[in-house]
Image (cartoon, rainbow, N blue to C red):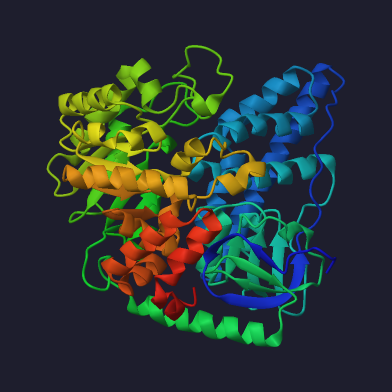
Length: 570
């Protein structure tokens, strides 16, 4: 290991457990095809189109076949994932894009690459859940381009001994057919909790860490210890460290199995634990993880890649499918969060935006296009009619009283009984007392609140140290919102990724959060962490964290007030 290399890399743990072994890397990245042109004759155009179509069809057929093999091994989730990828390869809109470029003289490989690029840009800018599909799209593109260029497909190495698979990102087509007896852990530099790498790792029961900077630099054969719960990769671990990690993993698994039922602190203070979802397909995982409802239903998936908004009937059906899944709980729906970095063809901004993060997005955009907002609200009201589920609807990017008041009025006109707003702009947190008089609840979006509080764009990796929800300034803003909500007897949930950190979840409850919402895999550990601490301990941890001058010291100070974290090997 070179001097200066850290012994522990940190990422996001997405599949619990510990695994140790030598690194095996996925190699053979497909090169970007050159911007070449074909001969230009009608015969050339026809040949290039036939080659592109054949490559895409071959990719779709291969993905489908891999899915059937995975299903035969008991991994039906893999078949679903690969089936979705095969649909990408067969997408008629994509084929039209490829053919249009070939008609303009672009060679087949380059035409495929550029046509996929259009979809990639839309997915990447459409929010966390849909952005997690970018890796899947890239894999389909690379497989098609590789066939057209005649270069080998990227793939997983063959090994006789167990190994830790390390990659920039893992394609579902590779992970779906892996032998879990050989792969003891996954580590990727990219990806997120909702990426298909994460989904498949959990389905296989293999520990996994994603979004782990530096892992791509690990040399082939380097021995590492992966902790899929803590989100760490220890380089060259000692035997004692490996044994301790495995004992801790076993103890944590036993503790998680015992933590069931509604979320609550050890002394019985209720903290409903809800799921963040991106559509009806996420409901099953949320229910399996014990979600008491949905705290953030992102509706962008319905609107992406369309020239017109989805029909009223399509919206109503998608909303009702989720509402029906939680007849005794609540479902918090976020209206369309588009604009700025999430452009949609039918919601054009008023002008070019030099700084999209501060542009027209969320409610700002919807107020410019009230027809889209009103149609969505009416569809939600119809979807909830006759059901016992409590429907709450919230607006993103609310800054002041005028916006909150206008949204509440639109909800009332559509027949929505419980309007709320997201707190993700510092101005909203600072004046939460005024906003609380306009709506029924708050939901703190810690990702954007941190971005705006620290003036650190979430897409700029160099500013990651400022994108930490443990920043004491961010904790202060959460506390202000929660205190204002409590003073007016309003709810104040947290739906940002901070809620998925079991230590920070305790602090958020101590700050006054009344519910926590997160990706489904994070629910059991947060439930277990809360169940081991009293409300008083959570409050002391919150005070300690806010008293610290730096994020690192805030973490340390909070942990000192939460002694039962050791039971979970945290």
